[in-house]
Length: 115
Picture 1 (tube, rainbow, N blue to C red):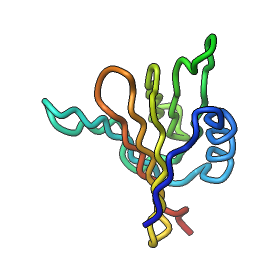
Picture 2 (cartoon, helix red, strand yellow):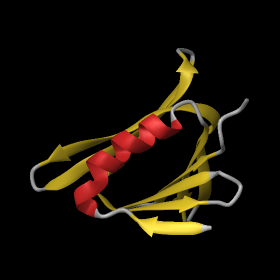
Picture 3 (cartoon, rainbow, N blue to C red):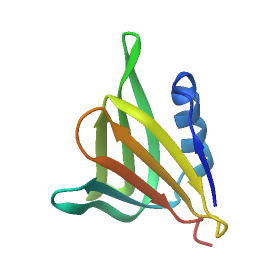
């Protein structure tokens, strides 16, 4: 397992490259609320992309989109993120942990593309 903290000044580039590299990978998106427990936003939907909306001097929000069927698409927004961690598993899976300034963290788990 390899973990890295993505430097804040590289978030836009990172999200763009990550989206290209992992497009279509099965994605599970969870909100990790310490009070109510994990809440699944999506389970094994193909990743559409991760984008960043920058506002002012600090990035404003990160949006994660998954699903390729119009009836089953999910979009999850993390406002004012403080940290983005990328965790690469030896199995080929990749996790992103996004921690906002306020509220619960979001975990995006991607399994390698299905063949």
